[in-house]
Length: 41
Image 1 (cartoon, rainbow, N blue to C red):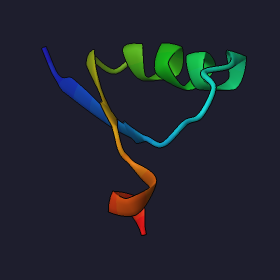
Image 2 (cartoon, one colour):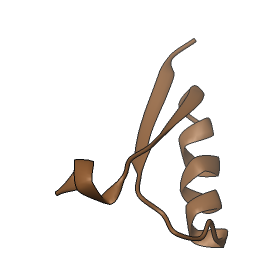
Image 3 (cartoon, one colour):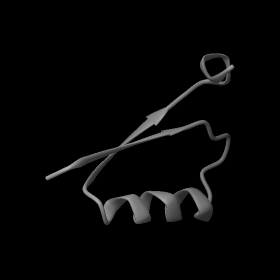
Image 4 (cartoon, rainbow, N blue to C red):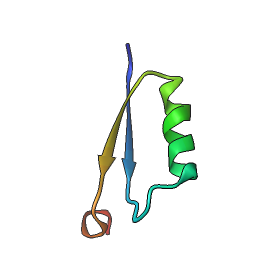
């Protein structure tokens, strides 16, 4: 099966984030990477 990677920077996980993860599950196994603000900038 395909692995889908999602990189996120979130303060509070909300329904919009969950929706993105659920949509990604349609394409394969999901791995979520949580990124710090300093790494994003």
